[in-house]
Length: 554
Image (cartoon, rainbow, N blue to C red; front, top):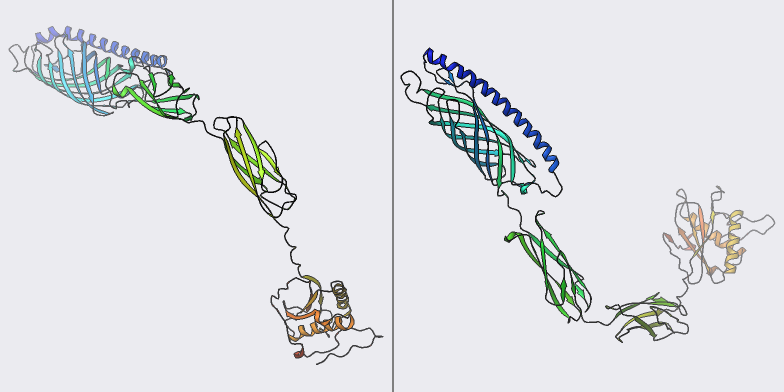
């Protein structure tokens, strides 16, 4: 702040004016604050009242033009202790151009020509920053340039330099296609420096003014252009069905994207053959009398004269000549035993959905039907393949044929017989004579003998086993003792008996019956030389009244 001396008379004479101007300034400031508050409240209510589902969200504008009321209030700024006074009313205008959604450059001018003794005019430019959230747009700017300011006494309006920075808030109105916004508040801090020259005699002119002031403004914003231009209108067409026969109707559907909901879209249709009707996104093509071939439907949508506001599309359909029916047939089951039936099923189709009739023939057996299902009777047919012919004919006489086959198989031969595990003998009971056939073992062998007598063609395999604490010959001795009992006591032919040893390490013996045609799998069993086995003890138990059996040969 710069100051100079002033005569007491001049100071006293200016005191009433300073007091009145200070009171007027405070009053105007309060009125401005109240008006700003009421404007913001009104906008909040208006936002709720005008919010509709059909209103699109606002885009980011490219240019903003602003004009509104202004109020300037210097603070602690004087020349020779004579304060600069508030100026009301005034005007603030600006033009902003944005490079993207957030950053731009702004040129601003303010006009406060009717101060009590002074005036303020500014012409400044600088960056501006904004952040748009739906319809609310807060912003901040920093400006610098020229300032033309009059002094608080009799200094004339003189150009100097100044800077301004501040913040504000815009609300975009839903009406007018989002082109108009209300600025309820713009609050700035302003500083200007003006040199009025050498103080004149009487100390009423000249001096240097450093003015600190806050500035309030409210007004209207005109929003022009878009940072991101709207995407061009696009149109796609589909036809249903795409393949028809003469006389079948065709429905064409257009699907448009990127349309402006505020504007009316106009559709137009054309077709290379037939007749098309429709004035909206759906049209119908009449194909009566069309020759077989390919045809094209063209659609067009427009919501303005600009290239991006129009789009076209094409789609094709094909007219086919009337076709004969088609048929396929199958047999279930496809393989049967002699005399068993098989069901023949035909699947036929007429492209024009004409009525169909069926007939059948077969190379063997009997078949007959006029429907889609027939039964093949194979009684009397020889094993082998039977060819079945399926026929279909429509009401125009166009026909089709398909073939299938049924195989008659001869009964399979019976499966070969399996070996039979007869009773097993344990030699754990007699610890002193571990290879002797005791009475319980004889009971088992009696059953074996009865089985061999019934199955006169079957053979018997005897598999002797020994435990880990016995000599391997123990298993062979058990085989020979059992065979001796069966041949000498039960009369079994020795040629029907085969002796083997092996298997798990236990004191036991297995009897296995091998019917004719059956196959015995040796596994881990082996035959042995009976002459090399040294037998010990009695071969089997004998009743006391019975003659003792012959001793086994060594």
